[in-house]
Structures are given as structure tokens and as C-alpha cells.
Amino acid sequence: MPDHIRSAGTDWQPVAQQGAFRQIMNCFAYPGRLGQLATEAKHGLPLLLATLVDRSNRLADPHRLLDDDEHRRLGANSGTPEMAQFVVQPGVLPPDFQPILGSLENPEQGATLIVVAERLGTGASLHLSGPGIDGTATVAVQGVDPVWWQKREQWNAGFPLGVDMIVVAERQVLALPRTTRIDLKGAN
Amino acid sequence: MNPNYELPLDEADYSFGFLDEFAKREVRRTILKAIAIPGYQTPYASREMPMGRGFGTGGLQLTLSLIGQDDTLKVIDQGSDDSVNAVNLRHFVELTCPGVDTTERTSEATLIQSRHRIPEVELSESQVLILQVPYPDPLVVIEPSEAKRKVMHGEGDYSRLLTKLYEDIVQFDEITISHRYPTRINGHYVIDPSPIPRYDIPRLHRSKALVLLGAGREKKIYAVPPYTVAAPLAFDDVPFRTEDFSDEHGARRTCGRCGADDSFLDELIADDGSKVWQCSDSDYCNQRLAEPSHEVSA
Ligand SMILES: [Zn+2]
Image 1 (cartoon, rainbow over the protein chains, first blue to last red):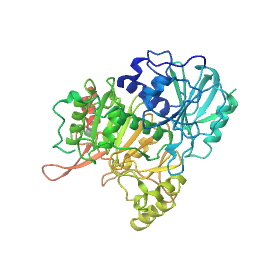
Image 2 (cartoon, rainbow over the protein chains, first blue to last red; image 1 turned 180 degrees about the vertical axis):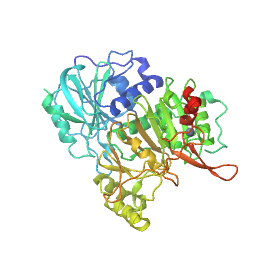
Image 3 (cartoon, chains in turn yellow, blue; image 1 turned 90 degrees about the vertical axis):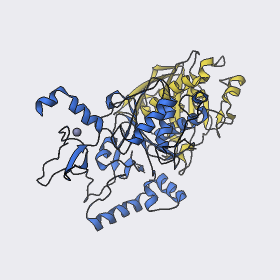
Image 4 (cartoon, rainbow over the protein chains, first blue to last red; image 1 turned 135 degrees about the vertical axis):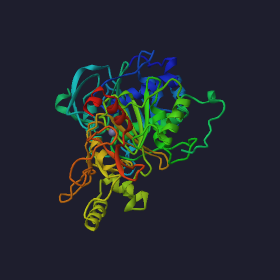
């Protein structure tokens, strides 16, 4: 990640966030489908975060994909990847942390991992099944280290505990809720 | 809905969608977790609305957190667009979300907020169904402690609920639950599907549309994602059945208005005291009456 990812002014407007949320929600409802984040910025990450994160959350960005100004504007409390509700990570690096998985009583406290990839729609194919998928689905992801998928499988082994992943690349977004099974034979 | 609620005189002070952006963001985060954990009653901080809780505020907060100017909203109460509750909720959204279209036609709606029914016409992937929930937890009949219920839900342990259901069957010789039939989602969580009739339960199963359920008073949001197994609790010797609309001769009753023999029927008492049957889904009934072929065949 050579440069910080920068927001556009419109990313902070309610109408942009409403539209972004519907795209993200649709991605959660239909895992494997790509959503489009309508932003004037070069990258969808700031709009994604502005839509979901605010002062009531703890956000970890250990690789500083966003600069201090952007973080100040989001207003989230900063935390380590081991204790944050939202964790932003570059996909090219394998995960080196243990996220919150939630508890049996409160599985919603499992973290949301936001993985920044290079491209969606090209790259290694993932074969998906689970709720929201009519049979199976295939999606291609470029710039996510395969260790992510192995770790994700471990983190999600004890449903309802687990993590939910959002993969964002350029202005496209893909959701992999904890219920989505990835056939790892297809990921390389 | 409280008929005495008043919007402030200066509506311009309110943001689009009435709720402030922090409230919307919290509902939105909760929705994503609810979808990711199908059937789990995800807690959130329900906000005060200018109408009493129990009048659809849980559903309304979902609608207001989703809706944008591209949306077309339909609001129904017990299948009807014209009931006082549906009209009031629709009016509230029209006031607080300028530019949003409303409709009574199921097929035109992108968002459908409903109390007590799922529309007759199968919903599509481009629609979201929002159900208003008064009592979200099916375990409350057997366990008063919420802390204990949460453990039972987490473990997927419904043995006591099944025992209670079975005792009812032994006592009454059939499943007596007419509404809120406990339904297991994706093989784990059992939900209260809101006071929809048993007839509507199969519509949750592998629905093409996302179904969101909101309980304002209990501050819970849960979801049935699309293409997800929704299985009513049942027993080998007492299978799940939907309502029986057969008459005394065993023939399927029909709607007295449009003639439908494939819809959920409400029993009404005519002026002369006799019983008549009519589609509970008023849009379905109206659309059938409007079909050109209808007059020919009727
Ligand atoms: Zn009819």
C-alpha cells in the first residue's frame, strides 16, 4: 500500500451512505455478488467505513490504510485488531492476529474484517455456498493471501461464533458472512 | 399507532428518514450482523419514535434506516393497505422521506413493511420484506430468564420448547398455534416469525427476498436471508400443516370478491349474518378483479 486511501467529500453525506449501505446489505444477503460503492473517491474503503463506523465503535487500522485526518473524521475509537469490532487489513499480507469471535450469548460481537484486495471479478476463484446463495456461487478475488481463507475457516468453525468479512477493491465490495462456506480447493 | 402523535411544526429540522445518522448507522450495523447470523435476535438500542412502541416502531426503524429516494414503499397491516395502522405508517414515511414513492401494488414495491402477513405474490430478489414483531423470543413461554434463553439459543437447544409443543399436541390432538409458529432458520436458531399465519411460514423457506424482522419494544432485529432453510418445528407423527380452507364438503373455499381459490382467506360476517370469505391480501384481490380475463371467466 504505497499511499493512503483518501475519501471524497461526498462520502460523508447521508445520501451516499444510504446508497452504500443498500449495496453492502445486498452483498451480505447474497454472498458472492459484487456491490458497487458510488463514490467520487478512487477507492470505496472510506465510504464503506463512513457508512458503518462511528464514535460508538472500535476500529483497528494497524497498517494505516487511512491517514489520521480520515480517522479523526470517522470518529471511531482506535483499537488493536485483537479487540476491535472493525478491523481494516491489506489482503496481500496474511493475517497475523486473532480477532474477536463473539460469545455464544452475543455472537454479533464477532468482528467485522474489512480486507482490502486489488481486484474483484478477476483473480483466484472462490466457490461459495450457504445462506443467501442459490446452490453455489463463484467469485474471483485478486490480492488476498490464501492464508486469509484458512484462518477464516478456523475462526468460523464454531457457529454462531465467528467473523464476517467484507472484501473491498477499488469501488467494488464483496461480503462473506460467517455462514458462507468457501471451498478451499478452488482458492489459490 | 398513537393517533395523537405530532410531528414538530418545522419538519425541516429533521433529517431525511427522521432518525439521526448515528441511529441509522446502528440499525444498519445490526442488520448486517442479523443477516450474518440467520435467525439470531440481534440487540440494538431502539430509539424513541413519535408513536407508542407496539405500533410497528421496530419495523419502522428498519424501514427508515434502509429507505432512499430510489425506493418504492408498500405498507400493509393484516394484508390491507387501507387499515388505520398501515395508512399512518405510510403517511409518516411520506412526511419524513420526501421523494420516496409509495404503492399498494406488491410487484412495484422495493420495500414492503408488513404486520401479520406475507404478500400472496412471491417476492423477488429486488425486494426486501420488513415484518413488525411484537414478541421476538419463542423461548419466553418456557424460560423467563433472558440470560438463560440466550444460552439456549446459542447452543441451538430447543428440547424444552419441543417438549412444550408436543404436550400441547397430546392435550389438544393437534398443533394449536395459529400464528407466530416457531420456525428454525438455517438449522440453528428458532425464531418467532411474527404473528403471520401458518399459511405464510413456507414463504420464508428459501425466499428470494431478504426478510428482516424488527421488535422495537424488545430492541431486537433478526433476519431470514434469501435462499435459506426455514423449517417450522414439527414431529414425525404430527407434521406441520397450514390452515385448512375446506368447506363442509371438502371443497376449497374461494374468495367471495374475486373468486380466488389459492389465497389466505379472512372470515367475515355479511350484513345478513352469514359467513363470507375474502382474500386477506387486498392488493392480490384487487389485481385479480382488475384482470381483463376476470370478467369473462366470472
Ligand atoms: Zn379475493
